[in-house]
Amino acid sequence: MKIDQLESQRQTLQAELDGKKTQEERNVMGQFSTPIALANDVLNHAKNIFPKRGKVRFLDPAFGTGSFYSALNTVFPSTRIEAATGFEVDKHYGKPALKLWKQTDLNYQLADFTKQTPPDEEEKYNLIICNPPYVRHHHINGQKERLQEKALETANMKLSGLAGLYCHFMALSHPWMKKNGIAGWLIPSEFMDVNYGQAVKDYLLNEVTLLQIHRFEPSDIQFDDALVSSAVVWFKNKKPRNNHKAKFTYGGTIDKPAHERDVSLSTLTKEKKWTRFPLSGEREENNTPKLSDFFTVKRGIATGDNKFFVVAREQIERRHLPLEQFRPILPSPRYLNATEVKADKNGFPDIDNQLFVLDCKLPVDEVKRVYPELYDYLEEGIQAGVSERYLCKNRKIWYSQENRPESQFYCTYIGRSDKEGKKPFRFVLNRSKAIVSNSYLILYPKPHLEKEIEQNPELSEQLLEALNQITGKAMLDEGRVYGGGMHKMEPKELANVPASEISSVLGKALTKRCTGQPKAEPLVSRYTASGCQ
Ligand SMILES: C[S@@+](CC[C@H](N)C(=O)[O-])C[C@H]1O[C@@H](n2cnc3c(N)ncnc32)[C@H](O)[C@@H]1O
Image (cartoon, rainbow, N blue to C red; front, side, top):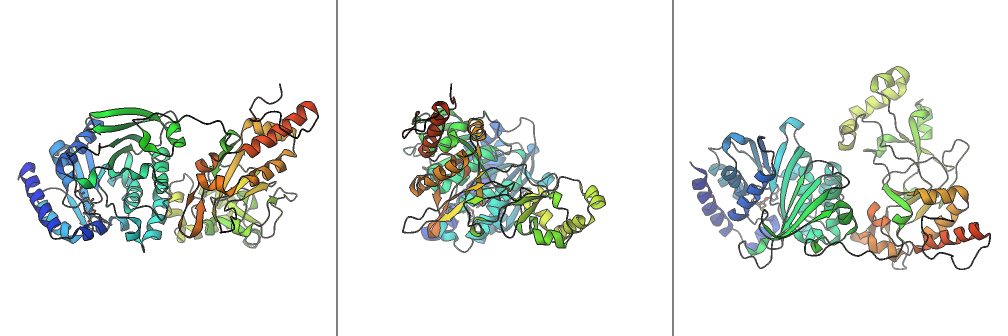
């Protein structure tokens, strides 16, 4: 049967199946099908940005009756479609749709996509097109933790408890994509402005190359109501170049938008409200110094499995593991009471229960030859499945950590505030060689500040004091809140925190060094990198 005949049968089927469900039932499952005109627009655009001669391996993880699959067959000749897979959890749509597409090569799985294991590289997909279920977060209670863990593990997407199922779908699809594969997601544009959407934006900024975000004009009556506030998000599965610009388009169609603007990743990183583009441009900066004027903020290391990689000194000694293949690491903020961590004679933190993280760069044969005890330990890790965990599996050497030097300044990353206004985050001055896990953020002084600290070692303490004077409110304005008063800060959010306290300390230090006189008021109100001339 020809595709247009199948499509017309599909539309009849869709209307029939929708009619047998209440609006509430469809809300709970996020069952709103994509009008075929839009599906065709989406696939046409996909074809425009897809390599001209490449074969298509297509995946729709929320298939329904298959409007995108239908559009795929309309837009691409069958000779170019190497594979096509769809997942659908609800038999109500799945069974009749399975029957409808039986004569095609579609691999239709009646299964919960969020519970599937991604395939090996050869079997992955280079075109993912999806209108995922827009299920609100309260309808996914009971599954949230599992989904959140999986999103973090598979796409480095730290989704809050407020994120809808569509965010999880996007994250969980990441390991199904071939390198350089293309994805087009039809999702609510809300993610562009609200707090829970930040994790999606971080993903689009850091993990993939964001190509385009198109929003429809609300007055456009071409599409039904459920879709007018939607955006189509296009990206490529490739880490972005630093100077990359993404296209923001509005109104008209994806390929012929009424408005468009290229926006750099650095602007997008700074901007919280992405819906200002393309109609408005970059926001004017105000002049208050921010932490990013003084520090580069990074996340602590993600080991992939702290239970395996982080070990106590006593265990290292008992198992005769080679200490030189470990780095000291601070305990998680819960177990670290001090604001200043001193160093012992080896540069290890002068605290009870010293911890170390395995960070070995040697190939396994060499480990076996030189450090048989460590080799046995690694074998245990393999048996326990550690080497197969997402982060470990994606490293060149599964038991080596990312190269992240220690710093003097760390900030706790997750915290609780209370009614008394207790500050949810805390800065720590680290005099030791210890690194931190990702339950902290690392503040690396920028070169101009580094130079000041070298010339004036007392400055570190003053800086710590100044950091801890930043008000809880200033930090919470940039961070995000989770259920139960939990607050979290991402590196970029911490970098955005206003830091007049720091410029004041530096202004004073600079005045003292230049004039030999401490002054009550800083010589420069906004410390600049120029230092004393
Ligand atoms: C917004 S509809 C899109 C359907 C179709 N792709 C289209 O564009 O017309 C989302 C579909 O995802 C299905 N769905 C919801 N949760 C799912 C899950 N966990 N796994 C697979 N499919 C799911 C729903 O039943 C629904 O058919």
